[in-house]
Image 1 (cartoon, rainbow, N blue to C red):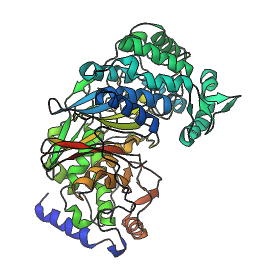
Image 2: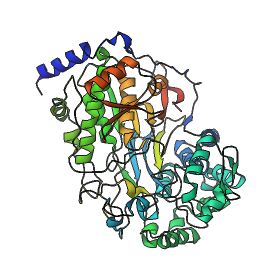
Image 3: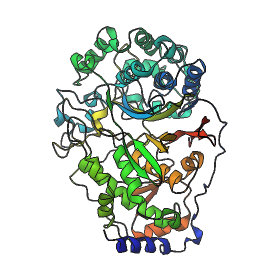
Image 4: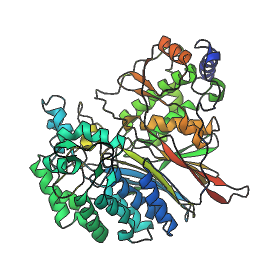
Length: 551
């Protein structure tokens, strides 16, 4: 794309789209949240009990990696609909000792005997199969926690799992979100699961107490055996037999062979910052594409969340999603050539297709069915006094995953295969039997001068990379502290043709975008990003952290 074309587009975007005097011009937040108290260690999560449990580990002398084990297992008890031992995820870590970032993938694999035909749209039972145990992929969460702890952990497993075990056995109060999720899913539960999540034949409601004795026993076994749980004993047998009897495809051998994988992260240099995220098999590079292509323009002059800005972001997001579909892959299928798709030449080539006065129609590189749910998944960030940091995304797929709980285990199995592409065989996002899954996870760390400034992440299904790109742009282009960057109303392009937006956009912006041809729809939240901001003194010494969330 010629520089004159870029200049014309920038000029048009900064002078068009109606009367922007009614639009939000600055980077100020409509509802700025006060920074929290500076602390030497921090945990950011969607649930206060998980935060409390992680902080207790840090106070006892554990490091960030120890606290991750505690936070992850506690979330599986207090937010069982979003993550747990039957799930999977990704972690971006910063090891202060080496000054290096690393990527730990435990996204899981498709069963070797998976029959893809039962999940294809042409199958009359496809919807039920995708939402049940036939869509279960390997539950690699424990493998990820073991891999992290064996490399960096300092405290013993029984102590790290103690909070989760206590909450499972002694019970936790059902909050409004969990109560609503239980009520909506209750009829899909087995009698065994209903006996835990119900009372007298009805689903538990907000204010009731959720007791998970079997989950507590499973966690106690894990505290003693660690990864060996998947190699032998009652738990792995119960999972294998339960999945088989329910029509799923996971075998005992596959469960016993599960492992997490360490990979190098990927990054781009942007406005004096280094934006680091997870590579294949995640969608992290899609978030980087969004940041990089947006960086072709003078964003502060356009104005944050003006109609010109949102139009540009929606069009760039179409390019980023097209690139994800075309080039996204896993280590054992097709690797994205990040050297090409994360280059300025590629972004400029894509940007020349943007029309400054009207929305484009999204044309994917091949037929696919877009499935997303912004209410699933969970994300948390942990940092310790030594400067170590972990940004972790965990999931079961859908809320309560496959809605299947192997009898006696107390935990839900995921339905990760639901989110594959079934319209065209042998694409990177195809459900390739025995191969690593491609996931939308996009945990991010922001660096400057080789030092981490923030660790951030979000739930949000297929919208995760877009939400993350916006938080990064808020911090880098508009110089917002993390608390303000997280509180801005997000927007996100849906490949079905809708541009979702959170509440808070001026009416003039919505009118201008509609005139341009965007189909807009308001959503309460497009994920709930959270993170930790690092604070240094003038000499560059670590002072502490501020934990932030837009929950």
